[in-house]
Length: 277
Ligand code: NCC
Image (cartoon, rainbow, N blue to C red; front, side, top):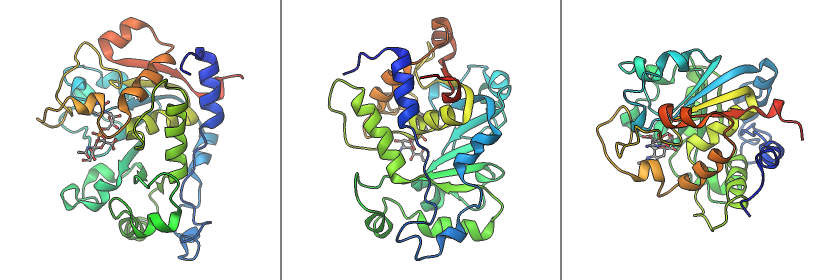
């Protein structure tokens, strides 16, 4: 059903959001020595250095002309996605990037220049790839959507000091289950967008989370990204990802005022550490 109250929904999201990364303890990664390849500090332990306020900045075209840059930068940590730049867009998106979630296209496609672009340096990187639902890790390793594994190994060698994690497919799919279980209709069996994953991640790591232009403001537009002149309404409403249902779910747990949603595309969410169930 989809009629749970706000607090019940928060409690369910808190209970079921278990951040998990590929840590080298399972095959085939254990046999390949990945326990020593991955960062020694687990991602979940970022929680112990908890951020009070966090901002999630989607890549939506509606961010353009928002003048939200200063407000975004005032948060303790800022999450951005894929190839979304700050350079040239500082007034609207700010300058600070703490964590960047990237999908496997970013590391596999030459056009993104993963190892030379400054977008992917000096930040915590979280990488994911759409593994089939309930496939095992060996199947995924042999046939990822885009080859993320060789790029990951190479980057760990090149920049061992950079916190760089691969999100575990079970974590990704547990978020899909969460969306499906709180949606009245059948949703497509494709993984959640980077945006939804990022929002739940920050609710786990932060005291409070401001999300910008996930739910579109009055600036809503068919323009896909603020940094590209490309128009496609599916970017905002979803085609491959269950994006519309992700957005309806996030809207239900907004604790911020309606006018901020309208004018800023801003949703305010409680961090899980503040939710008593
Ligand atoms: O477009 P993308 O996402 O990089 O956007 C990041 C997140 O912002 C939210 N968003 C974006 C645009 C928009 N108009 N409205 C939004 O709400 C979404 O939550 C989105 O997740 C992805 O999720 O990883 C995605 O990545 C792109 C693409 O691979 C990367 O940008 C790299 O070039 C996907 N597009 C394609 O594969 C063509 C997109 O489907 C999802």
